Image (cartoon, rainbow, N blue to C red; front, side, top):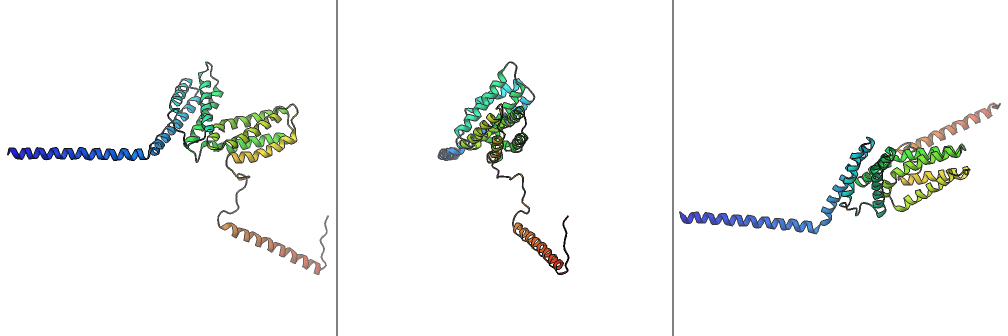
Length: 289
């Protein structure tokens, strides 16, 4: 009886040792797997942190619209402290990181003032909101929705130039365009090549000089606004006149539609020729008044 109990105890000890050994082996294999693929954990952590940054920026923007300065200050402190833990490798360029950092500094400066400028705080918060979203959603960022706004600003400036309106009107139209562009610039910098942003910056600088002159050169201003349409389309990744025209038929039916239209034109011309021939045969002339 005593031997049987000892035997049972021995079997239990062996089973426990086997379980511990299996657990250790499993942990080692899991650790080796993580070590062999460190980018996976880093990528998950990076994406999660960027997602948190985006959520915090959205909260900050809402608090700025409510003019809740204390909450804005608390939110911008959380963003600043978490920024050092984000890995931007593969997410954006050095210029993009710099643009994001500048935007955070702008919000800080607007929030720490004793008499906060409500408009300035909202503008800087909107920049940060769009920049964080551009990091979190590279395929469909919110800043692309500004295409129509900036296109309308450019059209208004072009119309003012065509109508030879006053220098004050031209300068005001430019300021609206510049304000909207500056709102999306950090977000665009995060996703686009630096030379694309540099082209738009240089173009805007030239436009500013023309619109703020005492006697604006209307011809040159019209030329520059026409060139600006191409730059704006490139900035937002749109083809020329993409928003103005819609294909008559999409897909494989386009060729069939072309054949139908061509047939109608040929038939109309044939009928017109036939009517002219009949008129000549019957000595009928058409008089023009």
